[in-house]
Amino acid sequence: MKRSFKTFTAILAVSAFVSQTTISAAAAAEMLQKLGDGEGEVSIVAWPGYIERGETDENYDWVTDFEEETGCKVNVKTANTSDEMVALMNQGGFDLVTASGDASLRLVAGKRVQPINVDLIPSWKTIDDRLKDAPWHTVDGVHYGVPYQWGPNVLMYNTDVFKEAPKSWNVVFEKQDLPDGKTNEGRVQAYDGPIYIADAANYLMAHKPELGIKDPYELNEEQYKAALDLLRGQRKLVSRYWHDAFIQIDDFKNEGVVASSSWPFQVNLLASEDAPIASTIPEEGATGWADSTMMHADAEHPNCAYMWMEHSLKPKVQGDLAAWFGSVPVVPAACKGNELLGDEGCKTNGFEDFDKIKFWRTPVADCDSQDECIPYYRWVSDYIGVIGGR
Image (cartoon, rainbow, N blue to C red; front, side, top):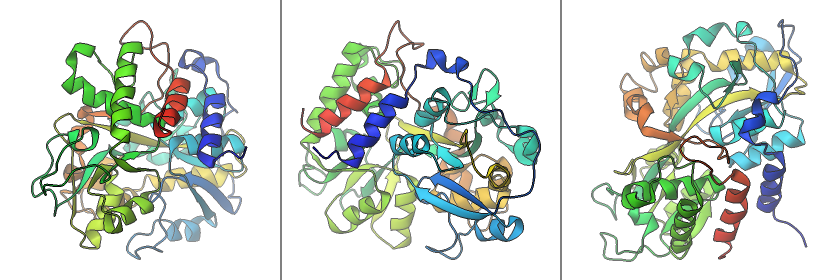
């Protein structure tokens, strides 16, 4: 039987995953000690909208200057989920990846990325102190990534249907009539990735406190079953499980979708087209992502890769990217004086909400909040089952 790409990447993700308890023993390639001449190109796996050269909007271009200054041509492969990123890095042929926390430690444990020599990145000292030693890219004091951007997973909604911002995620989790008097069945979406189980767990933390969930990424059997049951009920409401940002945009414009978890990127693009779209973080809070640029253990263009990591931390690049994606810069200096972001842009995008966001990370059995938790390979197989109606 021919496997779908989604199933294939899920299988790769499972095979790549190593328990977090063994991460400290994972030895990747030795880090570069001295920067040399560029090799002429660099290949990057990135989230949609993360690396722009002005093709979508000429005002947003942080690639052209880099190529002219370094002679390193930037090649980009877009990935729509963390599992897809892990699969591509396992496949090889890429130098860098903009990995979220639910992929980064898997890449370290799988020996797919190498330590970063921060001494070769002069702008490292300008990074937000909250991110320099973040556990999703730092293992035993060794940095395996350079912070890139961060932000929340927002509830995107149609303002013609919701005259006021929805107060709860229940509009996508529970069957109900929406403010326009019509049901939410077939008019909402959910994210097409196993990490979305954490969104269900986050919702249950507020609405079923008796479950005792302390961390949406650390679930025992009872808590995990409750999250899956919520998602099985949600399946009857969902018109599509989205992973392609541009398909989700089209669904909101043309297919009658009115509410979904999303990224600020989609919200910004739809708003730029004057679509009746806005976003909010409901009362239950939100999951989120803190992304790091990580370097493949067998990177063919290490010098260009280091040049890109340094370039990515320039305040102008950080500010422009934050304005485009709706994210938060990892360099606080980017929050002032950027024409595209504006001096209030960082606050608007959530700079002060860092401690409120439950950042993506890979679930492991050896967890901190309780004796034992459901590991990620179960999340992968069971979420495929949820989507398939099992």
